[in-house]
Amino acid sequence: MKTKNIPETWKKQWSKFMVSFFDYLPTKYEANKREWAVRKMIWDFKDGKRSVKVAELVAKRMREQFGAEVENVTLVCIPASSAAKTETRYKVFAEEVARLTGCKNGNKGVKIEGERLAIHETRTSKRLQSVEVITLNKRFFNGKKVLVFDDVLTQGHTYARFACELEKMGAEVLGGYFLGKTICGYNN
Image (cartoon, rainbow, N blue to C red; front, top):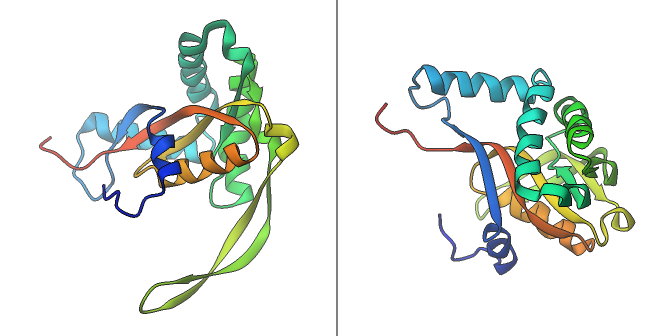
């Protein structure tokens, strides 16, 4: 990964613990039976079909890592590409993790508002794209110890950007959990 133009604040986030539960092999690579099972599980989770099973896995790890202090941790999920997808993917999951661990559900401090147009410019072109507006509740996050969750970690840019925004709200980001971590193809 190139780090030449990477903000120091992102590098700080990457120095914290980043736990991935499974290796995720993108579909452009040939996969064995286990890799296909992981793909299917992650895709199902994204569709809201395995929320409780994944919550059990995450809750177990949180209890092991934080012990009794888990009740002082706030779990917040990085929003998906739309409000509807975020609710499908994370509503039941986050509620179940909170129920199983006693942690706080940080999704209550994240609001996803309607779409707006964003202009993405490169040296050679401009592109308009609809994006969701994410608002973080400063009063909710101020002083909280936060564990960030996302379904798949690829380069870590989304995680770092989101964690930095939480810290601007006064949160202490402890690190991140990721259901899958993208890996490159290798000899199967």
